[in-house]
Length: 325
Image (cartoon, rainbow, N blue to C red; front, side):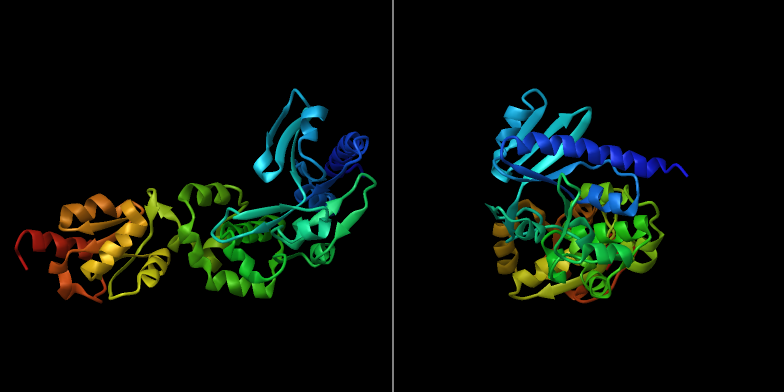
């Protein structure tokens, strides 16, 4: 029977092979990597043309002078060929000190080293112009077992917490399972998504074929933004001298604190406009919908460690302002 999806992928592989031959003439090797290799093996339709280049990214200007854009710093470029958009990146090694953006990049000449920065094993597959597959992390075995597993140690989810959502999305959309160790780490560290911009989270969620798994198994409602602000925990806490813990708790969903004035001033130097002092009910209403740490004035000391719903807390603050309590 005619397989339209597979035939479409064969055509795209043929287009890649034509592109690869252009690089070969310049004594450079280029490889198809990621989603299209995965989908080619799964016989699923794919639209991604992601390439890995063992060579100098400036060659793009020579090969595709009219339809290319280069970002030298990261060794990345985009170009068009026969109406298709290609994204190409030099083989590299990445170092992370903070979320999402690598602090240091080293260009290399090794597919295996480059593969260590990829997210999941099934996306760390490379194909050369002769359709030979390079698999350094048992990605083909994971494809056969319908398994989502991060490349390397599970702590790599910390490099980019959006990988948490990507793992769940891929499991959902491909009808795969998440590897046991990955699943446990994702469940324990789901709060890391609090540090990701809501627009990026929403963009990722739009790619889900179904969000039932996301909400039922991972309680996504604790992370999602409602009317563009966080679903927050309603607990007031007081800390004396632990600024790092306050920031960590904020990332976990706590947003309202009582603290010593010197701690507030210390955090203010670090967070600037992302921490504010709340003096009355109107301040609370103004800042509740914003991505900030709110610090209650010292006159609210008696509220330490009490639990309130948002509605109850508004009532308490309003009554204080009206002199009723």
